[in-house]
Structure formats: structure tokens, C-alpha cells
Image (cartoon, rainbow, N blue to C red; front, top):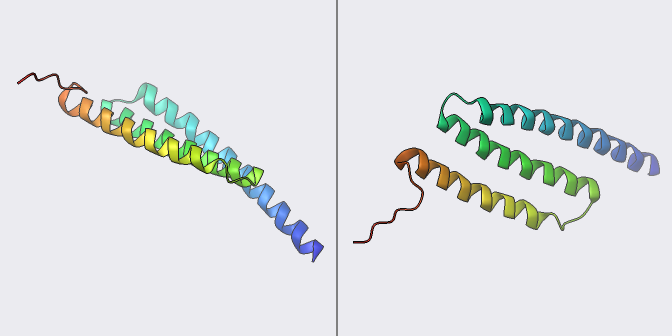
Length: 103
């Protein structure tokens, strides 16, 4: 039984390491897309995907630390990413984020 637990722990450690490396590489490539993106919608998609990758990285860290306390942070990153995507989409569409119409 202990051999099975040790095997499971080693598989989990290898998987966490591989996932962390893949997410880090993805974040570097996304930062490049945000900086050098040919158009503003490409930059917006890059920022949105960075938020998703940060959520994934936080989830991997939560699994590694065996703690449920990081779930609130994952939800917070998701909410802020959604609001940022809405603001960026409105800016790309209209050119302003907050309309100041005093009718």
C-alpha cells in the first residue's frame, strides 16, 4: 500500500512540474503577443488568456500545497479577468470605456 502511495506522489510531483513549466512558457509567449500584437484585438485576447493561465497556475500551486485557500484567489482572478475583457472590448469597439453622456 505504501508503494502505491509513493508512486502516486511521484507521479503527482512530475505532473505538477510539467504543468508549471508549460504554463510558464505559455505566459512568456502571451506576454510577447501582448507587446508585439499586430492589432488591439490580438492584445485583448492575449491579456484574457494570461488571466486564464494565471488561474491555472494558481490551481496547480493549490494542488501542490494541498490547500483549498487559493480557490478564492482563482475566483478573484477570474472575475477581474472578465471585467478587464469587457473593458478592453468596449474600448476596441467604441474608443472609450466610460461614456459621459449628460442627457
